[in-house]
Image (cartoon, rainbow, N blue to C red; front, side, top):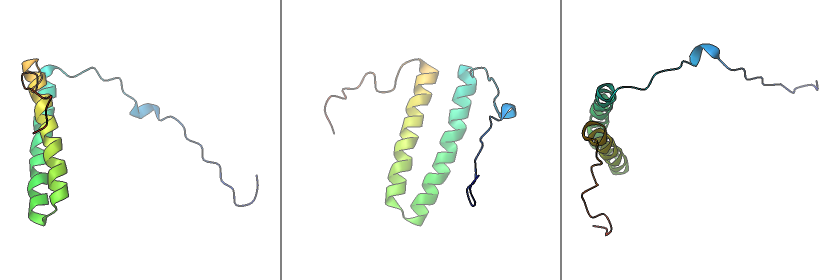
Length: 88
C-alpha cells in the first residue's frame, strides 16, 4: 500500500435490512396523512420566511401527496376524470 492512500471498505449492514411487509391501505393513508401535515408546517414556515420558490416546491409536493392519498383511499386516481390534455 502506497503512502497516503486509504482503502475504503463498505460492508453490508445486516441489522439495518429488515424485510417489512407492505403497509395496509389504512396504515399507508395514515402515514401519508402525517406526511401531509408535516408538509403544511414546512409550507407555513417557507411562507413566513418569504421563499417563494420553496413555497411552490412544497405546494407541488403536497399536491402529489394529496393525489396519492386519494388513490390509496378511493382506488382511483385524483386526475382520472379530468381533461389533462391541455395546459391551464
